[in-house]
Length: 215
Image 1 (cartoon, one colour):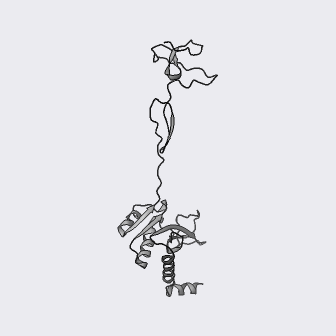
Image 2: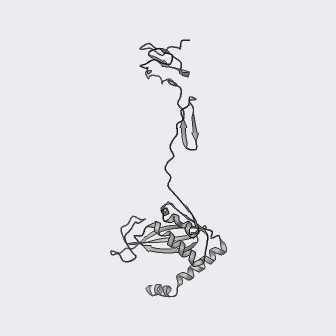
Image 3: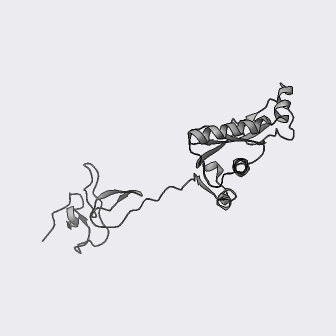
């Protein structure tokens, strides 16, 4: 196996396979849009070396690993693969792979699609190399807006649920719940009254139900 791997490196099999993949994708698809993602491969080894290093593992392991970046077309056909040290940040792998693919095949304009894990200030410089990109980003939850109007209705908006307050004291409390009384003057100027539908009010006995509004 090791002799075969050495022979593959000496004869440039990787470049030949990459050229064949590119020719197939160019003949059967569109290379104006490509997708990039990263994974990790771990080794059951106790010691690290120049390539296999302990880093952030997608499998939550503490073994030495490598980081593999893969570039595919919109039909998931592989175009370019990159291998990096196990402790290399994912965000620093996309540019080397994309630039190697671009230089290998002489491409001038592409759209790169990646997930939110690839979002970094350095990666946003892809446009400097005539490359456009679509990168996912985590957006904070939009706030709920409660406009203050007197209609007393609830509505749904694109920002989420919104509602407007009902007239004070309406709807009336459910049966068995004591009526809340004001300590100060009401709208009509009467001390110790409660509101009813439409904001009407009237005097209330200390232990009785709300009275009807006086004209």
